[in-house]
Image (tube, rainbow, N blue to C red):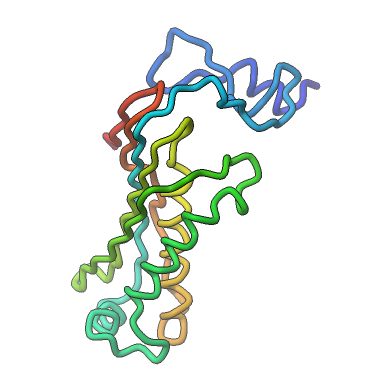
Length: 179
């Protein structure tokens, strides 16, 4: 039996390039995980935008909107948590490079009728590797923070659709989510 890492290394194609067999960059020729060497990559401006959605009740969204939850200002705390998380990504995800992040912004919007809290995280840098993981981490931790701050009134909340919405810069260029 071939180990899963070796099978992935040899048989993974990039979704937008059906004709080329691309390898997973964090696996070496033997299928072992390793940190990607970015020393020869060009330094470019890079940006990534990720999002997450917390589904709760319209009543909880009203409490968030009017800052009436016992733990305080949910949006402000989630925003700060997301920013802090982006800066700690390389400590949380083993093969991420530590980056000099030049900007992190986290926006929190609500849709009361749908019972949704929408989180968008934008991370920027000028460097040799992208900030997709930092944006995804920021959106995820902001969503977890919303859950933590609201769990006293709704333990049935659901965190949905943590996703990369777009990225720009680097060798692979621009990506925009279409689905």
